[in-house]
Length: 417
Image 1 (spheres, rainbow, N blue to C red):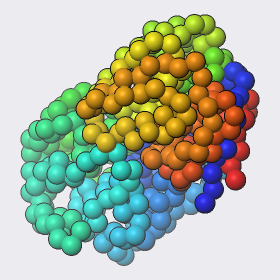
Image 2: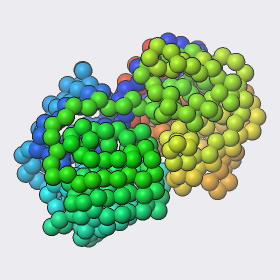
Image 3: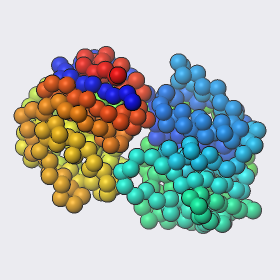
């Protein structure tokens, strides 16, 4: 199994291109199941999760031409010959459950295994199923599979008990071809929701209110071909912002959208980092003295849970006491024990972690317990004395394209073996 080896590095400086959003491209790819037309997608990141979705769609008979060099994908779902999702692929990635809404919408039936993904806490699909039931579907759960069916789907009002991104996306896709009007209340408002709605509207859907807590979908009879460019990945951008902060560097992030990064920008500014619009993106310069801060993860537009582990790595080497409170996932502190191996001083109290900044970390053998935890360990390793060996890096590769090369281009001492 490959590992990352990271040595203490100088302040990172230079330019880095932020790729297309992993959390946006996966639902957009899934949504192409809803029509038999050809769609052109641009800004596709070459990630293992995208490869998994590619394989899942191919198993259904979807024809995909993926030009990885140009981040370009052509998808045609005309000749679907299979409506049962492959168990071995779906259980690799939670986002694979997003094929359920499109299949139900187009064919009135879907049989999908319960999904897998990072073990960061309970992420049940009950809100997805609640939405399908409200639209008129029958739902059964047996032998690890969810089966949904409906002779017709009809619009309904659906209130989500929690603003789940996946449930919002799945229900929205199921409702696009349903009869009448559907309202999803207390829905997620993430930029990835807006991107999916923009793609579907470009295909002829009639979706309003995306980006607010109430989305209204007016059912249409069919969708037509379209072209769409995936939005930049705000979590990748945030990770490189913290890479600049932790190494006291000066990085320009091309394509980064400040509107999508407000809570991360706000906290870094509290820590005395300079952040400004530059070169079609953002410049992050953190050469001054940094201040400790508290963070509390919340659904968007609050501080993103995906940035919690990278930010904790930063706070581990900032003088003073900081508190990180995780409210989204109950099992997202698994990286704490790994940071402590490197000399971090962190105490967990229920869903909060108290961090006492140390003067320096030391290299150690650690493992990536999930995608964002792995990114946090790489960031910590950039300022740790000696060499850090990071295993289980398949988690990291799921969400960061060319992470090693991008870091190297900024001056990081990192290699994969």
